[in-house]
Length: 312
Image (cartoon, rainbow, N blue to C red):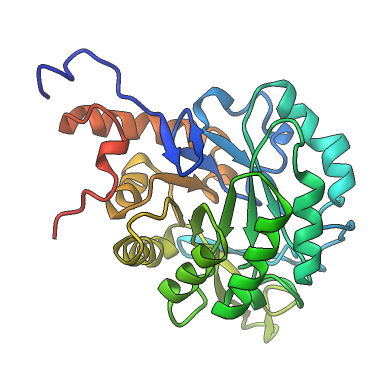
């Protein structure tokens, strides 16, 4: 530790393009509800932002049970974007977080390009919202979602439409279920993305050999947890090398501060904690504490100065 950093607290402020957060740790969509579910369990002051459960224009019941299955070092889920719809979110979910000063990133999902744009326009200017996350990577719905995130032309089209519909900073969540994550990232930036979020779940399957049926009712599902972390770190690194100016949120199997630092060194400016929230409701805060201890140990004055500091 240098004389300049000795005795000074590590600076956790994080800049993601137009967005500035108090810490680099964000809760990932679909793993933290709408925040209120974690009241009294998580320390919201340690979180840079809460990313909401996915929101659609109309209410959705989600997929039939069973839709969650534990796997080695992870879990499969096929919730299917169950949610009460955007109006119920704006009037009944968002105010709770806004009243507590918690920055909120709204994760939006559509079947058509027009639905994405309509959602973004409805959320524009809502108190408490600091960004919109365009989910073009959900593998658990029949229409929309990952269909947009697999093709660069469609990615650019949907991002452009959302960009035209909102003044909020725009995060685009990328799918790992593609041939080239870099091509999709380039398309998202060309469409007007301010920030890239990667990765969403990997498409997977688990079979009950006694019944000869899938453990998940719809067959396939999204794999998350520590099992996917090496894939996620690799993809963050690839995108950072190709698009060094693009702010990145890295996620996929982060359980500890050491896991998070891998993403930071690979080029992410912030990290998303997801599956860990199911195991430990205060995982995000504990991950941040671990990250601060690492920065202190290596003599870094801020976590930001570690971004992309991988040595090859």
